[in-house]
Amino acid sequence: MLAASCCDRRMCVCPGPRRIAIPVRSSRLPLLSDAMPAPTHLFPLIRNCEISRICSTMCYCHHKHLCCLSSHFAHGHFRYAPQKKFAALYRPKENFYQFIHARDYASTPQRFYLTPPQVNSILKANEYSFKVPEFDGKNVSSVLGFDSNQLPANAPIEDRRSAATCLQTRGMLLGVFDGHAGCACAQAVSERLFYYIAVSLLPHETLLEIENAVESGRALLPILQWHKHPNDYFSKEASKLYFNSLRTYWQELIDLNSGETTDVKEALINAFKRLDNDISLEAQVGDPNSFLNYLVLRVAFSGATACVAHVDGVDLHVANTGDSRAMLGVQEEDGSWSAVNLSYDHNAQNEREVERVKTEHPKSEEKSLVKQDRLLGLLMPFRAFGDVKFKWSIELQKRVVESGPDQLNDNEYTKFIPPNYHTPPYLTAEPEVIHHKLRPQDKFLVLATDGLWETMHRQDVARIVGEYLTGVHHQQPIAVGGYKVTLGQMHGLLTERRAKISSVFEDQNAATHLIRHAVGNNEFGTVDHERLSKMLSLPEELARMYRDDITIIVVQFNSHVIGAYQNGEL
Image (cartoon, rainbow, N blue to C red; front, side, top):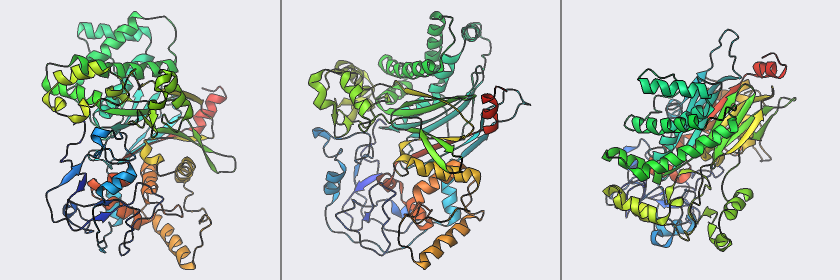
């Protein structure tokens, strides 16, 4: 679906007598104590209509008649924000709390915690690790391997991840993709973008060889070796459509051959822009297959940000579109850890990005371009794939919607035209590319969607991952950050750290370890099992009120190989 239907049940407001108070999405706020009354002026009231099917016994609702809101529209932190005709759906956070704050409520002082094995089962369900094999000194990689993981908040999760080794050129590709208004666009981009990048990097002779193989019906040269978790699927129904679009792209590259060596930065930019153009074109042309026709429209009307890294020897390129981030973990001479940004958010907090948007449109639109820190008052990221509602002309949008399937024509969101919509496109998928020469002190790279960065500072991420990879996180003195700590509290912190050393708590995946901290950290910067248990016990219709989907890839570099590159030995 382009937007969740009214029976989505991820956020419910119904007349049941029992309700739950959940804090706004911030890991810095303490969770409600089980026996502590919730202050009504701080927290939204969400009634829990499906809690009886969840293992937690916090509360339940007697009523089955629901007034449900789409989770894509209801939260102040979400990608889309309100206009008048959608005021009931798009309320900003403060007004939304008032909107659902109907009457007094009673908290339910019942206690339930997941056991450590249950917590681990949830955290490790989507983890994946890959170690780069050694090739007897040939094609030695600067990448030792990577760990990745995902923790859903939306149902289904709207984030995606991808990792692959380039087989016809050198290097490895890794990326995270954050979808909005559904997962369709993020899914398509996660399947297709790496092929567009790989094709953009291929020399002219290899492109000719691939095209000749297709013409003669011979087997194609493999372009990518994918490294995927079993849950990371490909859309079989759309594979032929996707292949035909990709083939058209490489045919054009053959015709435009300049004989020059392909620049990685240029290849990344061209691949991003071309894929977004193909997503738009496929939706305009449509498909005689009704399923495919609806699929390409869902992809185009939803959206996705992307943060992709290409690692080849000591050359690290990061291409970013949107507000996911790439961060380099650097180990200083004294053993401490520092963070180096390798991407910049494309949103209202980036003054250069705001200025870029303003320069692309008439002076008369300056005041309406960015409202409430959103593009046209609606969209948080200023760059994204899909989101044709911010790219197509009004005439084209109406023509596609009216000629499309009934599911599309009956959807209020797809028929809605953004306000002050005069000179599209307002949105681009063109990435900002940063090149970095790896050094021996550059130990790892973290790619993550904004679900991580909303809960953790980059310096904390660098320290936690660095200490995890070097195995010193159990040996550092406990820092209390200026808090007054009683002897009993200090004893509890020491006992907790000793418990972590046991195999029950020990993570074998750096991304899992980071998610554990992102969700369960307390004010002392250590994982609080009680807090973690409560967060993971939240049913799916409530989890999105507290945090976003989290997707993380941690890439570990081979310092010895990087040093050999620097010394000219490789």
